[in-house]
Image (cartoon, rainbow, N blue to C red):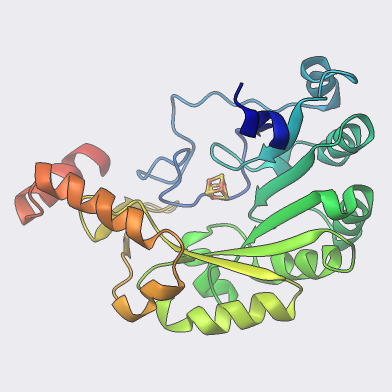
Length: 261
Ligand code: SF4
């Protein structure tokens, strides 16, 4: 382990759940053909006992941060998340970062989480619209009003509350409104990114829960690039893919055949 890691401690990236209450069309876990879970992804979630088994008291001295990330599911789907966080706080010096769609649990629960973890918790809520309809165009099954209530509740605690905003064509004209809304409900910092899942085409086609054809479109406004944290590497990734694959209609048809049945 290098000196840097020694000083900062190890970062543990952990998906404690592959369950999710949402069905975001471009998520790794979501099947674009109907928005169910991908067949190959096993359904797992850790409870307190499983977490303590993996990280017993006395084993976390060299861990600087637990990043409970929502790559394959939302950490809030673990019924014992509060108790897991308490275990980390009580038996280590590690900080906790959580990414969540924020649509689960009650404001009381969120306040309890913030008070249990205090400043050692950094939490990112997904905010993708200024109303329920705009938000749920990507964050399917998640009610924005609930997210905002939960965010407001935990913002009354010492926890570091942040918003994570993904820009598409359908919400890019409301970027400043989304930032203002998130700040109004307690976000101290808003991280704005653009979707990195348009590597081949600027349209992402999918079949929704009811069997209807829908699509998401990549953001178009270059003037917003200066607000976007991942702009450069998304552009580089797009160039890389496009240098290998043509972006023509025939390819769209090929993709249709692969993903949309
Ligand atoms: S909330 Fe996160 S884990 Fe759940 S479907 Fe959306 S992107 Fe995937």
